[in-house]
Length: 339
Figure (tube, one colour):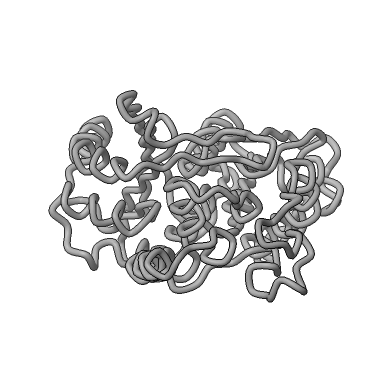
């Protein structure tokens, strides 16, 4: 960013400070350009201002090249040889960083030789909370089909959408987001096995006063994000009542929650949750750890946090309260336990 945005020394120091305060040590990208000198770039032109700047067509070509194999690897990691992918009955693909038809669902069917009659659908352009929306769909399917085996795969290539104009929104997005993919299997009662969590239910609220603070729009040079500094403040104001309403709906109390699975949209988001609920920082350790290692990957990020929580607490009773945030301002939650 310092090179492309032609920052002066003062602005470079500011940017370095922001990176040091981000809570992020490493992020990942399908584009090798970000870790190579300009003469080795293959996606961006090695010019001072990146002209001719990559078009949205070029970005979608890269998405279609890298997203399907990455998603397939996530599915295989999820199943870990415990189930043949051909036994999957339903496929839900989730993304907000690449759109086409035929899309990721059909690409995965072909790549993994999935059944041609598999039920498939897609959750697109919902942003960071989309994994919970996909879990809602999977849960509804499993309640109606006892033997359903629903595979959800969230795949985001956020770094395809770097923008060349040095606006606050572009700088913030480029500082936070990375690429990643995660998959989760949801089964009906007929496919229930030891391990994993049982979903109790979902709860969501939309705060329209925040709809201008977080948005995601198509442009001729990729997808452009608006991410204002007010978002953590809005979440801090509203999150406690959201939690209370969600727990009340399911007849539960805060004391019964053993683990908080919070989408680490950024360090300030996690700090806002701590303040809103009066939590100690260690209660959100899994969120901080994922942010530190991967940055914000949009929809897969919550599943990365959930994976850490499950691995840490495999031998104990767990009740997980999960929450993620996205355009709207939308706040989605679910509650699950291992009883």
